[in-house]
Length: 105
Figure 1 (cartoon, helix red, strand yellow):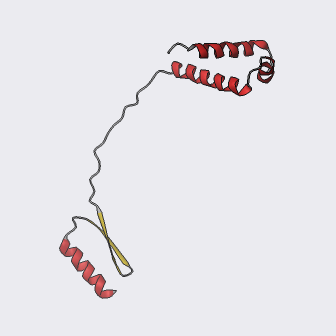
Figure 2 (cartoon, rainbow, N blue to C red):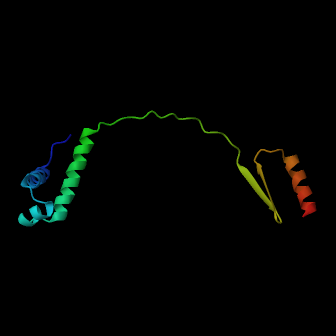
Figure 3 (tube, rainbow, N blue to C red):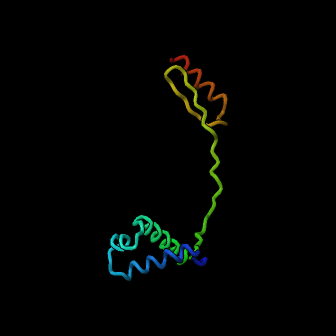
């Protein structure tokens, strides 16, 4: 963990004094002319810094699988009829289906 900056050390001492005072945080802030929001923010920031220092980085294994190869889907609309098929489908078959649909539409 990086050492605390002088400002962080200053606020760490204030937080410790507040805890040892026996006063509520609001009373401590009032008596020491500290904005309560500043105390709360520094308490949170220093707690987060402490937590991040305690938890070592861990790595989770990642398995990368090759993408599933699919052909793009082609959609054709004939009047109110929609036909979808995979690209690469036999063109002759597709033309027969379109012709049949066109004649029935």
